[in-house]
Length: 194
Image (cartoon, rainbow, N blue to C red; front, side, top):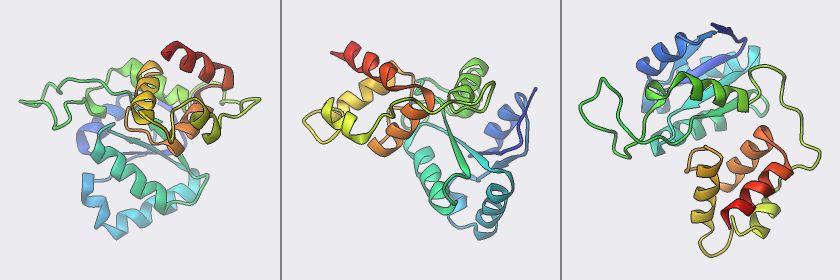
């Protein structure tokens, strides 16, 4: 079991049970969209973020991104670490059918992939170093990943190549790219798309 000082925030009880098998850390569930109406839970998240930081680990579907965005907007900068699980299609074994988007949630993701996601976020092993040359929104624009024809499709292709959720917007993608690699890694991945 891996010990973390940060509180891990997940969507539901099955996600919490899944993560509790891997990490020795406080784990708090949002209750899905219940977080939008639960002022006490949001206040608790703010206190936990202030005390030791929080790790946001939501599903890679639209609902997960809405919850992630809401919580991140309510927490001061620098107190949230985003961990993204990749888009993997399928259904969890406890369910009779796949989700609306057909993607596995945190509860259905393989241990190895969850640990890789935490590693990419700089939470395991040596902390991530800042890249020599940061990746910027201008880089994405110049490479056709932002503000141009088919840029959303190109972003999704890049995310797939790097095993990131397809739903990342430009701002989130820049943050994630800078946390998992450097400019050279980014350019290599972009060049491989062409």
